[in-house]
Length: 197
Length: 208
Image 1 (spheres, chains in turn yellow, green):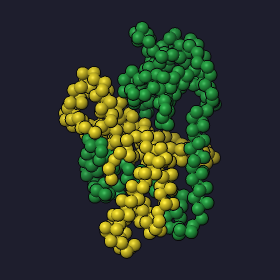
Image 2: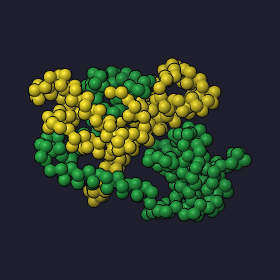
Image 3: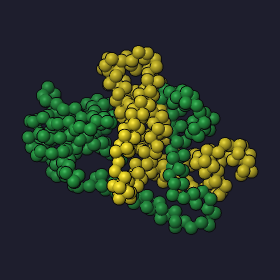
Image 4: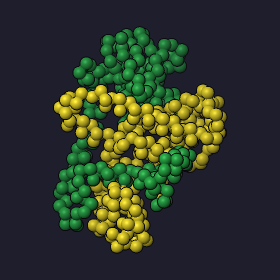
């Protein structure tokens, strides 16, 4: 993907160039998903909503008043996303304080179902398939230590008697297979899967 | 894997480092895609482990039917969601809602947007109103817009559907709604991208 500098994008959007708005969306959306995934606690629906809101706010700002330093357009978009995530979190916190705890207790099961519906189910299905395919029990344990427990690479190598090269190779294989599974199942709706590993 | 991605995912960066990393991601989409793939792998593992970590430590002879059953459970959930989202056969399209023609652009309009923190719903004026939906749209796709009536117990009845709407811009999609044909109450415009399994977007409003 060709990178278009923020200054040029800002100028074209201000001049009413619709293709520049599409370009901005293509350019910034992957990074905004990264930033907001970290701030939405696994709520996939909220993540998508906030990405969309951020891009709308940025485009509307560029159509109107513009930003002080167009060269820092990416940083402006990132900060907008952070602000929206904070606002969303505050709203959720306020709603929590208004909750009728008895009613929450009575409706515990539906709430659990809702949580399940808003998570990234595609990723969970792909991981399940990946775990089923991994030939070595050691590889499954390695993934658990690395991604779930955030253990340091050296520590995992020590525990599982692996060289660092073998660890990297196994991890690379698992990552590649995960990507393939997502593709095979038609989960590659976005261009996420064009990414190089 | 790039060490910086590893540190970010594991939460080992300081706040300022994480911000700089995120700014870099927003400015560099190809790099961001790599990071997102890692995030999804981590999220997927976290979700699987939320139920049990058995699958990470099982031996090769572990009972595969359990995994198949769990997979079927998730697929069933997905199917249920799909059916619910597409539930209720749309009625035959009437003139309640239609695509916008160039002559209608100067008339009454209502802007709908998903704004967090907004509690009130916008009210639709009388007569034929051009409804401008603010969202993120792909101008190379056609969209289907369904007009749903929502009663006081949240039952949904589809009163009109229009297919093949092209967005007016990457952030705007428009339809004409004849308010006089609607009864008083809450309504929602459901916007879905055709030939895509992306989630539909809902925009609520009131017909006073």
